[in-house]
Length: 188
Image: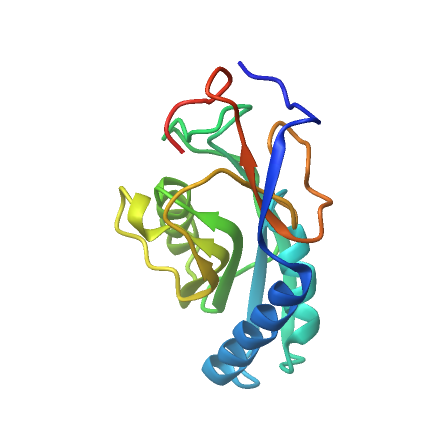
């Protein structure tokens, strides 16, 4: 397994200002969808914490309840194993309620497919997904991202909550982590 390399190259893809504008746009779309209807907004930890925090502060709907959950499918790798585990479940009752899942990146779709099935079993009235990054080109499972800030087709991204081996989460922008040919992981 590769260790995080603090000297690894970073290429900024989206600046903090671009992110701020897109989060505001996504919040407007969500407000347009739900209005003042009661809404449960779920943060998928850890990667979505920055987006979640910014997004819920932009929402005009004050009839919102927040909760957190955590999934695992990557471990310390750069590719999803496809085997998803629910590490921390939600605490709020979502039966008969609208739910918005806030995620950092929707890539292969395995994690979100797992989560959508889980939330349906808990009786959610509806479930939609908001993501910072939608990597549709890499989708292996049919999952729709309802609200996204940016679309990407490749690259291993870090910053704005997203990490590589628990590093780079605090970068204000979204960056592609550049690897040398020698240290390049599998497909990403």
